[in-house]
Amino acid sequence: MKLLSFEKPLAELYDKIEQLRKLSSDGNIDLSGEIQKIEARAEQVRQEIYTNLTPSQIVQVARHPHRPDTGSLIRLIFDSFIELHGDRVFGDDPAIVGGIATLGEYRIVVMGHQKGHDTKENIYRNFGMPNPEGYRKALRLMQMADRFRMPIVTFIDTPGAYPGLEAEERGQAEAIARNLREMAGFTVPVVSFVIGEGGSGGALGIGVANRLYMLQNSVYSVISPEGCASILFRDAKKSDLAADAMKITAPEIQKLGISDGIIPEPLGGAHHDWKTVAQRIQETIVADLTHYKLVSEATIKSERYAKFRAMGRYTG
Image (tube, rainbow, N blue to C red; front, top):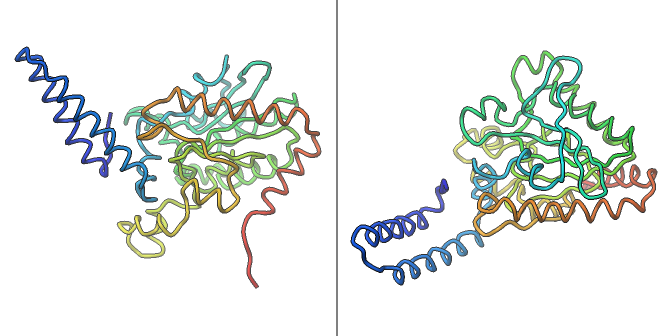
Protein backbone atom coordinates (compact mmCIF):
# COMPACT_ATOMS: atom_id res chain seq x y z
CA MET A 1 0.00 0.00 0.00
CA LYS A 2 1.40 3.40 -0.99
CA LEU A 3 2.18 5.57 2.04
CA LEU A 4 1.68 9.33 1.92
CA SER A 5 4.39 11.87 2.77
CA PHE A 6 3.09 12.55 6.28
CA GLU A 7 3.07 8.79 7.00
CA LYS A 8 6.89 8.60 7.01
CA PRO A 9 7.08 7.42 10.67
CA LEU A 10 4.86 4.47 9.68
CA ALA A 11 7.13 3.59 6.77
CA GLU A 12 10.08 3.25 9.11
CA LEU A 13 8.13 0.95 11.45
CA TYR A 14 6.82 -1.17 8.57
CA ASP A 15 10.39 -1.54 7.27
CA LYS A 16 11.49 -2.82 10.67
CA ILE A 17 8.61 -5.30 10.75
CA GLU A 18 9.53 -6.58 7.28
CA GLN A 19 13.20 -6.93 8.23
CA LEU A 20 12.33 -8.88 11.40
CA ARG A 21 10.00 -11.19 9.45
CA LYS A 22 12.72 -11.88 6.90
CA LEU A 23 15.29 -12.47 9.64
CA SER A 24 12.87 -14.76 11.45
CA SER A 25 12.21 -16.75 8.28
CA ASP A 26 15.84 -16.96 7.07
CA GLY A 27 17.37 -17.73 10.45
CA ASN A 28 14.55 -19.91 11.76
CA ILE A 29 14.27 -17.63 14.81
CA ASP A 30 11.04 -16.84 16.62
CA LEU A 31 10.78 -13.03 16.65
CA SER A 32 6.98 -12.92 16.85
CA GLY A 33 7.02 -11.13 20.21
CA GLU A 34 9.20 -8.31 18.91
CA ILE A 35 7.15 -8.07 15.70
CA GLN A 36 3.92 -7.75 17.70
CA LYS A 37 5.40 -4.93 19.78
CA ILE A 38 6.37 -2.97 16.67
CA GLU A 39 2.97 -3.66 15.06
CA ALA A 40 1.27 -2.29 18.18
CA ARG A 41 3.50 0.77 18.03
CA ALA A 42 2.68 1.24 14.32
CA GLU A 43 -1.05 1.11 15.10
CA GLN A 44 -0.58 3.71 17.83
CA VAL A 45 1.38 6.00 15.49
CA ARG A 46 -1.27 5.62 12.78
CA GLN A 47 -3.96 6.56 15.32
CA GLU A 48 -1.98 9.67 16.32
CA ILE A 49 -1.42 10.72 12.71
CA TYR A 50 -5.01 10.27 11.55
CA THR A 51 -6.54 11.95 14.59
CA ASN A 52 -4.70 15.19 13.84
CA LEU A 53 -4.74 15.52 10.04
CA THR A 54 -4.40 19.01 8.59
CA PRO A 55 -6.66 20.06 5.66
CA SER A 56 -3.77 19.67 3.20
CA GLN A 57 -3.09 16.16 4.51
CA ILE A 58 -6.78 15.30 4.13
CA VAL A 59 -6.50 16.42 0.50
CA GLN A 60 -3.69 13.88 0.05
CA VAL A 61 -5.84 11.11 1.55
CA ALA A 62 -8.79 12.12 -0.67
CA ARG A 63 -6.52 11.76 -3.71
CA HIS A 64 -4.95 8.45 -2.66
CA PRO A 65 -4.66 6.25 -5.79
CA HIS A 66 -6.12 3.24 -3.95
CA ARG A 67 -9.23 4.93 -2.55
CA PRO A 68 -12.44 3.06 -3.43
CA ASP A 69 -13.74 4.26 -6.80
CA THR A 70 -17.28 4.57 -8.11
CA GLY A 71 -17.26 1.31 -10.08
CA SER A 72 -15.94 -0.71 -7.15
CA LEU A 73 -18.41 0.83 -4.70
CA ILE A 74 -21.29 0.05 -7.07
CA ARG A 75 -20.24 -3.61 -7.17
CA LEU A 76 -19.87 -3.77 -3.38
CA ILE A 77 -23.07 -1.88 -2.46
CA PHE A 78 -25.73 -3.01 -4.93
CA ASP A 79 -27.22 -6.43 -5.60
CA SER A 80 -27.03 -6.02 -9.39
CA PHE A 81 -25.91 -3.36 -11.86
CA ILE A 82 -26.38 -2.84 -15.60
CA GLU A 83 -24.10 -0.15 -17.00
CA LEU A 84 -25.54 2.14 -19.68
CA HIS A 85 -23.39 4.06 -22.16
CA GLY A 86 -23.45 7.16 -24.33
CA ASP A 87 -25.12 10.55 -24.42
CA ARG A 88 -26.94 9.96 -27.75
CA VAL A 89 -25.23 13.11 -29.10
CA PHE A 90 -21.45 12.65 -29.29
CA GLY A 91 -20.19 9.51 -27.56
CA ASP A 92 -19.50 7.71 -24.30
CA ASP A 93 -17.36 9.31 -21.59
CA PRO A 94 -15.42 6.82 -19.43
CA ALA A 95 -14.95 9.53 -16.78
CA ILE A 96 -18.57 8.99 -15.71
CA VAL A 97 -20.09 5.55 -15.24
CA GLY A 98 -23.77 4.94 -14.61
CA GLY A 99 -26.69 2.62 -15.05
CA ILE A 100 -29.53 0.81 -13.30
CA ALA A 101 -28.93 -0.99 -10.01
CA THR A 102 -30.99 -2.92 -7.49
CA LEU A 103 -30.69 -2.86 -3.72
CA GLY A 104 -33.20 -5.01 -1.89
CA GLU A 105 -36.65 -3.81 -2.91
CA TYR A 106 -35.33 -0.69 -4.67
CA ARG A 107 -34.52 -0.06 -8.31
CA ILE A 108 -32.07 2.81 -8.50
CA VAL A 109 -30.24 4.82 -11.13
CA VAL A 110 -26.65 5.15 -9.93
CA MET A 111 -23.72 7.04 -11.44
CA GLY A 112 -20.47 8.71 -10.52
CA HIS A 113 -17.11 10.06 -11.57
CA GLN A 114 -14.63 7.30 -12.34
CA LYS A 115 -10.91 7.66 -11.69
CA GLY A 116 -8.23 5.06 -12.31
CA HIS A 117 -5.81 3.34 -9.94
CA ASP A 118 -2.77 3.49 -12.24
CA THR A 119 -1.47 5.70 -15.04
CA LYS A 120 -2.97 3.68 -17.88
CA GLU A 121 -6.44 3.59 -16.34
CA ASN A 122 -6.27 7.26 -15.34
CA ILE A 123 -5.48 8.26 -18.91
CA TYR A 124 -8.45 6.19 -20.14
CA ARG A 125 -10.72 7.76 -17.49
CA ASN A 126 -9.24 11.24 -18.07
CA PHE A 127 -8.34 11.33 -14.35
CA GLY A 128 -12.04 11.48 -13.47
CA MET A 129 -12.56 14.79 -15.34
CA PRO A 130 -15.68 14.47 -17.52
CA ASN A 131 -16.21 16.00 -20.93
CA PRO A 132 -19.64 17.43 -21.87
CA GLU A 133 -20.79 14.02 -23.14
CA GLY A 134 -20.22 12.66 -19.64
CA TYR A 135 -22.62 15.17 -18.12
CA ARG A 136 -25.12 14.62 -20.94
CA LYS A 137 -24.94 10.87 -20.33
CA ALA A 138 -25.56 11.50 -16.64
CA LEU A 139 -28.52 13.74 -17.45
CA ARG A 140 -30.00 11.15 -19.82
CA LEU A 141 -29.87 8.55 -17.05
CA MET A 142 -31.30 10.93 -14.44
CA GLN A 143 -34.17 11.93 -16.73
CA MET A 144 -34.93 8.24 -17.21
CA ALA A 145 -34.92 7.82 -13.42
CA ASP A 146 -37.35 10.70 -13.00
CA ARG A 147 -39.61 9.32 -15.72
CA PHE A 148 -39.78 5.84 -14.21
CA ARG A 149 -39.86 6.98 -10.55
CA MET A 150 -36.46 5.54 -9.62
CA PRO A 151 -34.33 7.20 -6.93
CA ILE A 152 -30.93 8.58 -7.98
CA VAL A 153 -27.63 7.89 -6.20
CA THR A 154 -24.45 9.66 -7.29
CA PHE A 155 -20.79 9.33 -6.28
CA ILE A 156 -18.66 12.45 -6.57
CA ASP A 157 -14.90 12.13 -7.11
CA THR A 158 -13.36 14.60 -9.56
CA PRO A 159 -10.79 17.40 -9.57
CA GLY A 160 -13.29 19.21 -11.81
CA ALA A 161 -14.79 19.10 -15.29
CA TYR A 162 -12.23 18.74 -18.07
CA PRO A 163 -11.06 22.26 -19.08
CA GLY A 164 -9.64 21.34 -22.51
CA LEU A 165 -10.38 23.18 -25.75
CA GLU A 166 -12.40 20.27 -27.19
CA ALA A 167 -14.61 20.18 -24.10
CA GLU A 168 -15.30 23.90 -24.37
CA GLU A 169 -16.06 23.55 -28.08
CA ARG A 170 -18.63 20.85 -27.31
CA GLY A 171 -20.37 23.00 -24.70
CA GLN A 172 -18.90 22.09 -21.30
CA ALA A 173 -20.46 25.01 -19.42
CA GLU A 174 -23.86 24.50 -21.05
CA ALA A 175 -23.86 20.78 -20.24
CA ILE A 176 -23.16 21.39 -16.55
CA ALA A 177 -25.63 24.28 -16.35
CA ARG A 178 -28.36 22.14 -17.92
CA ASN A 179 -27.71 19.40 -15.36
CA LEU A 180 -28.06 21.88 -12.50
CA ARG A 181 -31.36 23.16 -13.87
CA GLU A 182 -32.82 19.74 -14.58
CA MET A 183 -31.73 18.18 -11.30
CA ALA A 184 -33.38 21.01 -9.39
CA GLY A 185 -36.73 19.97 -10.87
CA PHE A 186 -36.64 16.20 -10.36
CA THR A 187 -39.41 14.74 -8.22
CA VAL A 188 -37.45 11.63 -7.22
CA PRO A 189 -34.95 11.74 -4.34
CA VAL A 190 -31.30 12.34 -5.16
CA VAL A 191 -28.68 11.10 -2.67
CA SER A 192 -25.03 12.03 -3.31
CA PHE A 193 -21.74 10.96 -1.72
CA VAL A 194 -18.41 12.75 -2.00
CA ILE A 195 -16.00 9.80 -1.93
CA GLY A 196 -12.75 11.62 -2.76
CA GLU A 197 -12.44 15.04 -4.35
CA GLY A 198 -15.49 17.17 -5.02
CA GLY A 199 -14.15 19.77 -7.41
CA SER A 200 -16.15 22.81 -8.50
CA GLY A 201 -18.93 22.60 -11.11
CA GLY A 202 -17.54 19.26 -12.22
CA ALA A 203 -18.79 17.85 -8.93
CA LEU A 204 -22.00 19.86 -8.76
CA GLY A 205 -22.97 18.63 -12.24
CA ILE A 206 -24.18 15.40 -10.59
CA GLY A 207 -24.52 16.76 -7.05
CA VAL A 208 -27.75 18.77 -6.81
CA ALA A 209 -29.09 16.39 -4.18
CA ASN A 210 -31.68 16.16 -1.44
CA ARG A 211 -29.03 14.60 0.78
CA LEU A 212 -25.27 15.07 0.39
CA TYR A 213 -22.81 13.01 2.44
CA MET A 214 -19.03 13.10 2.58
CA LEU A 215 -16.58 10.39 3.47
CA GLN A 216 -14.56 11.44 6.50
CA ASN A 217 -11.38 12.15 4.52
CA SER A 218 -12.96 13.64 1.40
CA VAL A 219 -12.95 17.30 0.33
CA TYR A 220 -15.48 19.53 -1.44
CA SER A 221 -14.39 22.85 -2.93
CA VAL A 222 -14.99 25.44 -5.62
CA ILE A 223 -11.36 25.10 -6.78
CA SER A 224 -8.37 22.94 -5.90
CA PRO A 225 -6.00 24.25 -3.19
CA GLU A 226 -3.26 24.50 -5.84
CA GLY A 227 -5.51 26.56 -8.13
CA CYS A 228 -6.59 28.78 -5.27
CA ALA A 229 -2.97 29.36 -4.20
CA SER A 230 -1.99 30.22 -7.79
CA ILE A 231 -4.71 32.87 -7.99
CA LEU A 232 -4.59 34.36 -4.49
CA PHE A 233 -0.92 33.95 -3.58
CA ARG A 234 0.60 33.72 -7.08
CA ASP A 235 2.30 30.53 -5.91
CA ALA A 236 0.85 27.01 -6.22
CA LYS A 237 3.35 25.81 -3.61
CA LYS A 238 1.29 27.65 -0.98
CA SER A 239 -1.53 25.13 -1.42
CA ASP A 240 -1.25 24.13 2.27
CA LEU A 241 -2.15 27.68 3.28
CA ALA A 242 -5.01 27.73 0.76
CA ALA A 243 -6.39 24.40 1.99
CA ASP A 244 -6.50 25.77 5.55
CA ALA A 245 -8.35 28.91 4.47
CA MET A 246 -10.84 27.32 2.08
CA LYS A 247 -12.79 25.21 4.64
CA ILE A 248 -13.01 22.16 2.35
CA THR A 249 -12.95 19.26 4.81
CA ALA A 250 -16.01 17.20 5.73
CA PRO A 251 -16.55 18.78 9.19
CA GLU A 252 -16.24 22.30 7.75
CA ILE A 253 -18.61 21.55 4.86
CA GLN A 254 -21.16 20.13 7.30
CA LYS A 255 -20.74 23.16 9.56
CA LEU A 256 -21.51 25.40 6.57
CA GLY A 257 -24.77 23.52 6.02
CA ILE A 258 -23.77 22.12 2.64
CA SER A 259 -23.47 18.44 3.56
CA ASP A 260 -25.94 16.44 5.61
CA GLY A 261 -23.58 13.97 7.23
CA ILE A 262 -20.14 12.41 7.42
CA ILE A 263 -19.46 8.72 6.69
CA PRO A 264 -16.67 7.52 9.05
CA GLU A 265 -13.67 5.87 7.41
CA PRO A 266 -11.55 3.03 8.81
CA LEU A 267 -8.39 4.14 10.61
CA GLY A 268 -5.83 5.13 8.00
CA GLY A 269 -8.37 6.04 5.32
CA ALA A 270 -10.98 4.39 3.10
CA HIS A 271 -8.27 2.77 0.95
CA HIS A 272 -7.51 0.35 3.81
CA ASP A 273 -10.99 -1.25 3.92
CA TRP A 274 -13.30 -0.85 0.93
CA LYS A 275 -15.92 -3.27 2.24
CA THR A 276 -16.50 -1.38 5.48
CA VAL A 277 -16.85 1.90 3.60
CA ALA A 278 -19.28 0.32 1.14
CA GLN A 279 -21.36 -1.13 3.96
CA ARG A 280 -21.66 2.25 5.68
CA ILE A 281 -22.70 3.94 2.43
CA GLN A 282 -25.20 1.16 1.76
CA GLU A 283 -26.81 1.64 5.18
CA THR A 284 -27.13 5.37 4.52
CA ILE A 285 -28.73 4.79 1.11
CA VAL A 286 -31.27 2.34 2.51
CA ALA A 287 -32.16 4.67 5.40
CA ASP A 288 -32.71 7.63 3.07
CA LEU A 289 -34.72 5.69 0.49
CA THR A 290 -36.90 4.28 3.27
CA HIS A 291 -37.50 7.83 4.49
CA TYR A 292 -38.38 9.17 1.03
CA LYS A 293 -40.90 6.39 0.39
CA LEU A 294 -43.23 8.34 2.70
CA VAL A 295 -42.50 11.78 1.20
CA SER A 296 -44.56 13.26 -1.63
CA GLU A 297 -42.98 14.16 -4.97
CA ALA A 298 -43.77 17.83 -4.49
CA THR A 299 -42.08 17.83 -1.09
CA ILE A 300 -38.99 16.06 -2.47
CA LYS A 301 -38.63 18.75 -5.13
CA SER A 302 -39.28 21.70 -2.80
CA GLU A 303 -36.95 20.27 -0.13
CA ARG A 304 -34.07 20.16 -2.61
CA TYR A 305 -34.81 23.71 -3.75
CA ALA A 306 -34.92 24.99 -0.19
CA LYS A 307 -31.67 23.21 0.67
CA PHE A 308 -29.71 25.04 -2.01
CA ARG A 309 -31.44 28.38 -1.44
CA ALA A 310 -30.37 28.24 2.20
CA MET A 311 -26.66 27.84 1.38
CA GLY A 312 -24.40 30.78 2.04
CA ARG A 313 -24.41 33.67 4.47
CA TYR A 314 -24.73 37.30 3.53
CA THR A 315 -23.87 40.46 5.44
CA GLY A 316 -25.04 43.95 4.63
